[in-house]
Image 1 (cartoon, rainbow, N blue to C red):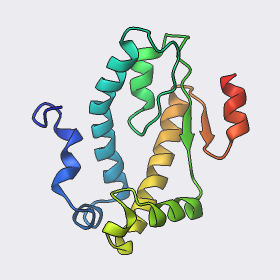
Image 2: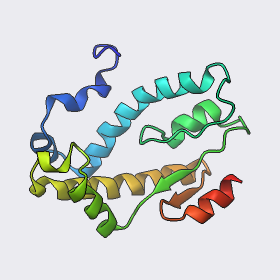
Image 3: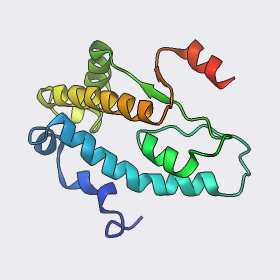
Image 4: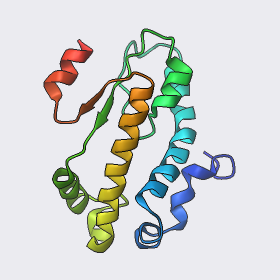
Length: 152
């Protein structure tokens, strides 16, 4: 996509992890991510609205926001939204410090990774609140049996 048409998709490219994460709060990161997600959603919606060659599918990603799903599919009973969350700081910390979120974990210092943990926890809180507003279920990612039961 064109950076001029979709500037929020490319917003983070102008920063390093240290530059961005040391100058923005977790809530600001969530707000910026959600702007990016709004632009990414246009492609996701185009995929979902394309010829039904897929039959059924699961669409996963941080760009799937409750208000966008509700706006575009709130009346479509064939769409069954659910949102996965994770609010275990130890588990999040392990993922961030092992894998990294901004980039591969080894490419930036551990000193900024705590902000990523804050960001994930802030997004988790925001997502739960938004999902509840639109009456969409949330599940912790560890609740595999409950998720499968809901989908079947």
